[in-house]
Image 1 (cartoon, one colour):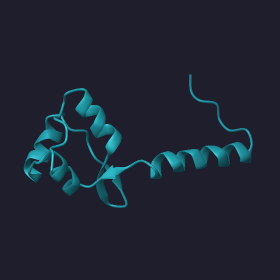
Image 2 (tube, helix red, strand yellow; image 1 turned 30 degrees about the vertical axis):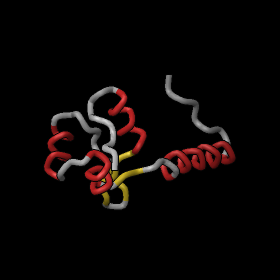
Image 3 (cartoon, one colour; image 1 turned 45 degrees about the vertical axis):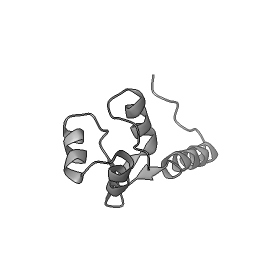
Image 4 (cartoon, helix red, strand yellow; image 1 turned 60 degrees about the vertical axis):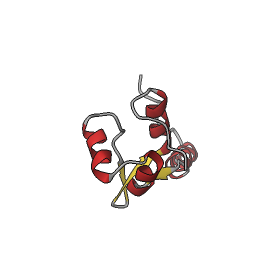
Length: 86
């Protein structure tokens, strides 16, 4: 069943604010951050994406970024190894 549509402007504004918090307060990582986090090269990073082992990035303001939450879920599922120790 689809979610109930907001009935008033106040409900709409509250839902919009909740959506903004969810989108903009979620930690995101750049390609270089992933390379450091997992100790892999750029080509390996994109190979893992093609094979479906690494989540696809999202596009935000022209950048490809990965949600930290998606990466952690892939780690827990055993699709990718955990972060390397520094």
